[in-house]
Length: 157
Length: 443
Image (cartoon, rainbow over all chains, first blue to last red; front, side, top):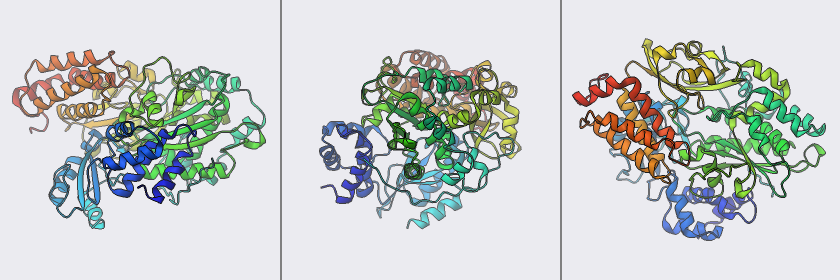
């Protein structure tokens, strides 16, 4: 069951489109449910599809196409580090190595306490602030240094 | 249908060093609170819109002004904006749409982000003027999902504009109405392609459509749609305020106006630099503080990885405009300039880029879906010491067979770096294959 808050937020997104184009809100609706539940299970995707009156497979196509949707649990904090070339040129490898040893996990792994999941990201369009990382798809942290990474991770504990 | 959601975020910006820049689309950066409505109004914002709507300026006159400005699409293709606008059908029985492409996902591209977070109202005004001109009733600004905080901020700016009467029903007491909404992507480079973006707005996976029909006849929800880049729309209010000729005169022939260059990589001060078209590369590099750590320049990707890499020697004489970069056998692209110093391994850089295009291919066209993966696997074996000399011809061959055989431009975009890196830095690739390690860093 979608929560009343999720429904209110999806309804707000629906105001952006013609009444007969409810599917247009699926990108937001999946994002809203993911933010609330931490990740998107098949059941969650089905609920979104039903609410919008669209085929489940069409919602699944969207959820699997865009890489910020998480189809598996990602722990409490998903940390996504960009390793594309603008970040690579400014030392993203060092940030990745540091995070991997600090958290004790590789890419796509979750720490044993369920707190952190480390992901490798593609370009996030903020390359002037390289190297950078993203927490839970919402918070952008730029101009990373080892000290800054320490402070961010400590702040999340 | 009134959407209300106000961002509570306060946007403050450290005063940017604007010496040497010519600010048109980022002109609020001279002020303390660049993104606020008050700031924009103080700089003459929304005055052009009000004049156009209340004086009922003819759409054809606006299009003529935009044509005179020499403005060309700032998203990468460089198509003349005024000409694009003239393709929209004048009379259509139904809703026409206006779309803004703020979906930056090509490595090195981050200029439009600064427009939406530092000068959102100029973009909004530009879109409303475009909507008036083209008869669009509804507009969407599609913003990539990674910059979530900026997306929410822009939603707040939209609400400010609605509350102030610059968006909505019967603007300035006229019969012109226009609603504008922010919508978001969620991680797909391909949605920067205009028809993939339209599919995404409709709530589908972002696979490009075959063209024709072009969006001007079959766009959002199958209706006539005009799609422009953020920087293009944001140039419009300045053009209407100062005249098309004044804008054209800022630049050089065939490249009117200013351009934001998003500079990343090995420079002292990465960031956005809005300068007159035609600025010599040397001057632009100097604005960024030059190559970092006192090192030598090795190469520049001038417009994003879909544009050909240019070695330092050739780059030093280039002017930053459409023709200047064509002469260097590259392109201005979206102005996403990636600077590489002498310590950069071109093999490893291309290896990372090839993974990006493989990852981001939408999978619709076989040459791109299979070709990008093949290129990546070949480069991967080279960087792992398993390369063969004939791999270089193989990479060239695969890339040539992707180009021109796909629905959208991602195919060319993926092929261009491979072809240009190997062309200009072949000895580095040969060394890597022979020795199983990089000529540059020895690793």
